[in-house]
Length: 105
Length: 170
Image (cartoon, rainbow over all chains, first blue to last red; front, side, top):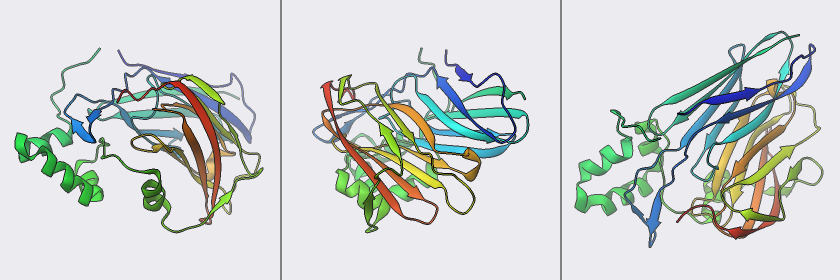
């Protein structure tokens, strides 16, 4: 089953830039081609990643099949107040995987 | 692992509309108007093969690419034993504020079928540029990391990564 794991620092200070590491278990199945033509095959990969802090967007990524299986992303967030980091992964089958982590001061 | 879904990906619906004989025709139509097809589905979908020059022209038009220099630091392996997992890290110490910040980071592998690996859109709330992910590479190739600043200027970092075993399965 797919799941999201998020790692953040245990404690942060106001105004600090923290690094968030997010990993989702996902097969990222890619599509096969032969002679430049697409051979019909099941594909299923994550095409969009959205990250927000307290509802404010910090990162939006457009990803393709050329991102590894079980995609891992790390990014930075500037934190001014305690809150919640939320990362949403969207895949091409219309499913979303959400992960959250609390930032404490 | 794979679950049966009630929602069909849009591309399959489109292909069904065209019928089995119309698969090629469907692809041609995607090639003609990828934007409308993408907008109609709302889902990411595999797109036709593309050369790196076409990708760069599609993304940036004729805007000049400047060398990144010490504006950003990119960590890429010289030799990747497994093309399926190639770690990339992009960092910069430049301050990010509302006036000047890294708007988009593009990771492009020249010799992949679709050279664009990923695009990251940042906001001033990111604080600083620090991104990492793993990409797939089909073969030994140049990898470019292109940063688009908020004022529209473009900076490119390019490095060759040798791949022992390709990772795109095609």
